Image 1 (tube, rainbow, N blue to C red):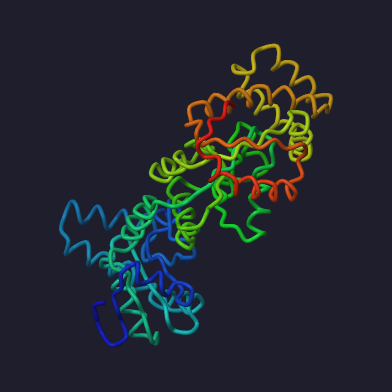
Image 2 (cartoon, rainbow, N blue to C red):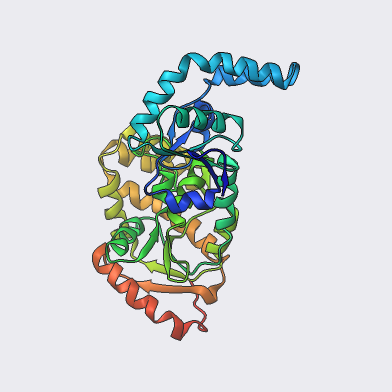
Length: 358
């Protein structure tokens, strides 16, 4: 840990993690930088607006560093009182951490200003947001023990994960972090998705607190969930882990999907059907749309599940069958099913050499 003054200290991102529950964090980058990706929990108090940052960058490239600094000082001077008042809202105790992109001039000058105007302890994160991103990507290489929860669409895997978490199990809900259910229908009713960068940041923020020596439950996913991607190192680790495959009759799953989607906007449902029209085929697409128009949601679900079941099975066949453990279930009772899954998982060590055909 390096010392600037008695009140201002530079720390690594790893050191900040040990303080993060007690010390609020201020991100002084521009709003555009923050929106693209930020450390979860950080509050954006931008030193420059997006336009101002562009102006300073242009002067730096076309003229000189000195002139860019001079322009920057001119732009931020009128904001000094605002910086203090906004920072006091974030850190009323007077203890705060600050970062910019690389832990350079923006964060150090902002932190110095806070230190001079009443904040009793100000930390600057060395390496800034870039250090955080490097730390996150390195963490995804961790060799963790996982169990992948697989099964055809409509098996209520997300509900089961929530129940497992209630039962004290370690869980990562990738679809929850992505704000998307992974299919053509996955964005309905969920609002917008985070950026790819922010999805990775949010994933790390949950990942960092887990015990990698104990089982972590994760739903089986493709590399892409809607518009975001699972980090490749993390995804490759998932693909090497055992899969508990939930085998539930299509009719049961269709009824569950009706409960999930029957109140959704019909235009959005029709749009999702049309997005998979080539895979459904012309006849099934027309039938599905006709059933939708007639509010026959069960029939819509049964038609679309024919496609999704084939799609999922094709992907599953590319996995190592020695690591696939089918579990036949009779209903979509996620509380009951979660208990059966844990019992089934306990037997995996005894049967790991058995090959399953799915």
